[in-house]
Image (cartoon, rainbow, N blue to C red; front, top):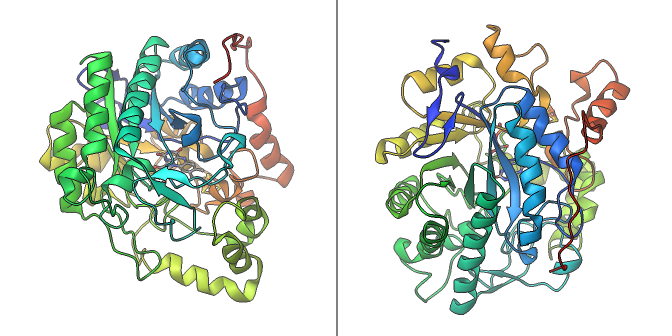
Length: 449
Ligand SMILES: Cc1cc2nc3c(=O)[nH]c(=O)nc-3n(C[C@H](O)[C@H](O)[C@H](O)COP(=O)(O)O)c2cc1C
Ligand code: SF4
């Protein structure tokens, strides 16, 4: 057995991973408009499982159709989808990896409303539009919140029935839980607003409801933004501090969470997440898909479309990042949170070098890393580390072209400099449509919801 900490097993309360590397939440518009998942998603997830990670955390999986960020992402809002999720889980398990579903609701942060969501405003903690894109929203009533708590619990139940290994609550990066947690966003005057305890009520109620529904032995982790950095538009409030999140982390543990996944930022994407470049020339050809999504969409499109205007947006965006490294960008915050709780802490944000990951694990700063883009660039990153390399020969450049292609194009690495040719790049992107072995998708025969 290896004495390299990266390859030592990680035991959560009721789940053990074979190593300390999780594929962080990421995928593309691979699925059907009704939310049923496709073989393409199975092909995508098994790439990483075959590449050697210990676990995979799914991308954003809505618990209701009204909570989607974008059409074409699989949902978990129907019982008759359970066999589909089971097929996905079995395909990942075949490679010795575990599968955790990220249970989510967009609230106002809905990038591309599908056919179910064209009637904005969307439910949120607030009726104030989101400030960057101008997504419209309305404050949910208390009865509506209580119903949504049950929708999360039922979704966790479906994940367990499907034989998956756990769930993660997406309480980071500006989605609905953040809209309640953040002092920069939540302006409610009722039991769900005001004090930090009130703002955390929705999240803690969901944890309690999941525990009541699936018991204590099904893995449940929570993704939190350590710091909101909510003031991308300079006059906005800064939102929650690290001290606020430390307190929320303690409450999550007390309510029954088994692990925490630490990210950053009260919006997605955010200058600190995913950290790296922002090639506006890519947004100039993909952001048009979002022009009608928010009241500032057209303004933003002009800022991306005309080279003379681009410095304005670049200044706004990079102001918050300063000279921080891309790699391990939130490690310091994750360390502080780990010191405050006794459950394992996973850190995400730029990890790609074996020595950085090993050092953080050996010092006890964190218990595991969750990696998205460096694994998109090199699905077998972990095997490069096992072979003794510090980084793969063609590492991720943090260019964020994968991210900025997402509104229109299939998910994959779009950094041409990493390939011998453009044709090779497109062939790699299209590889998600190639199925190795038998098709795994069973028919769905329930009534549409
Ligand atoms: C294209 C793209 C899609 C993402 N989708 C999600 C998501 O659905 N849910 C989530 O929690 N994080 C999402 N993330 C954030 C990643 O999971 C990860 O935390 C972040 O990119 C920082 O890690 P990295 O530097 O290893 O990419 C996404 C990131 C990218 C680039
Ligand atoms: S496009 Fe490729 S190189 Fe650029 S950030 Fe994404 S995965 Fe990394």
